[in-house]
Length: 302
Ligand SMILES: [Zn+2]
Image (cartoon, rainbow, N blue to C red; front, top):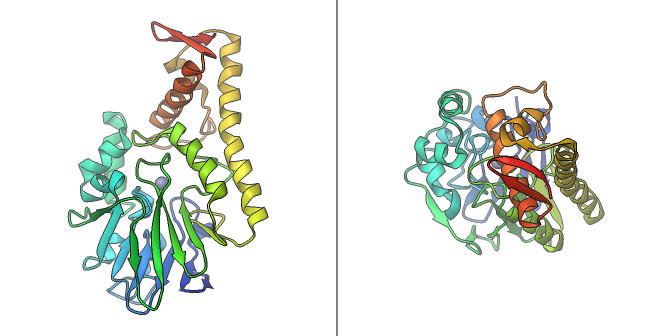
């Protein structure tokens, strides 16, 4: 069965299960006069590919906006397509070890993630993948182009892929969901993410497409409203950390157990590592701003 889809100029969006909620995503296909490109490959695209009918049909080019397990989940369906990834994320698509370094989880979580990656997410490394820099342009024929705009933070290489004509921006995992920004991997950086959220507000576009959940947004006002709420999640997490520190000094381990990112009843192999990395990002900013002090691994309000 085909998923619901939406056509916008040269772009077709095939919505994933539950509107592309993780672990699935929305499949973007761009059809030029000569080349058909796909942006990322979600689990729901496993139904098609070069072996059969589906959203990946006829795709010769895969442009990854960034590299994560849920974005490479049907690459195995396109063994002959040319694959491009942002330079900062390239090692992660080239090998499983590269992906593990990208996450930077503890040995126990990494072991479980390896199993999930190749099992649940069908990951097949692409040592043939090529890196692209900020500003790279692909011409797909008939005047259809794709331009990469480096917007890091979620991952080191995370990029927006801008399709013209139409000003159609694939904004990937700047996904405007209620969860808020994700900066829980070794390759994530909260300062960069905050810069990115500032820059994307001023980026000229007419249509915004997220990989998860929100899907296609065609009104600037709505985009700005969702962006404000998304950014606000960072401030809310920071306020929650400060509230706990106001009650007394805390070690990182104790703060991790508090759960500032995931709800306490949410379980997955990476949750503790993601909490730790995300907290480390917040604390680094708070230390720099001299709002928090650290001594011998104990954090307290300054
Ligand atoms: Zn991601």
